Length: 260
Figure (cartoon, rainbow, N blue to C red):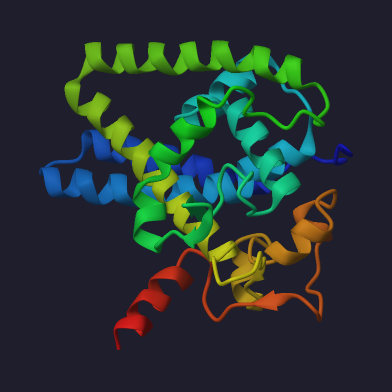
């Protein structure tokens, strides 16, 4: 993996906004405002995952311990767990060995997850991957070193939950809600990038305005073809598979179209 020459400071806008809306949810009153702000924070977490933390994973093999802890608290899950999960995804690209696959087996037959089941069942899918005998890609470099960093990151998250519980039950519940919603939206985003349409299609959303605002996040087919490139080095390819709507929205639009 090639380290990029510059740290992606521009992309840090998304975790910063996520943090701001989480704090706003803590202080907001009445409760419906807290729920609205935590919903927005959840959407921002999903973009943090797919834009900022995604770039960080490809940018550098290892950060300082304090940075790993900070990233893990912003994610609500261990940062290096996400690292392994994402490299596994690149290796297996929505096949059944992919931890984030949009398929599952029934009587040795490949079946597609529905968008709803895939989105809200992300925690179950994650727990299955974690409890596999060897859930990591054995060909990945520095596997043992990366695995050794996940434990302290888990402890930091558990400790943070404990501190929040001491401070406020509301803070504890809002942080859990933020984590669950953020990763649910992230799963929905991934479903739009890798819809189970009968093939292992990788989809690009080509809209120039969207990709300007969201740092080429729509160029997912291109990223899979050249994962060593940073976000600002990607460009739209003529032969990429295309979808009509942004990855986070496209699965919902397909559900609506199926019902009409």
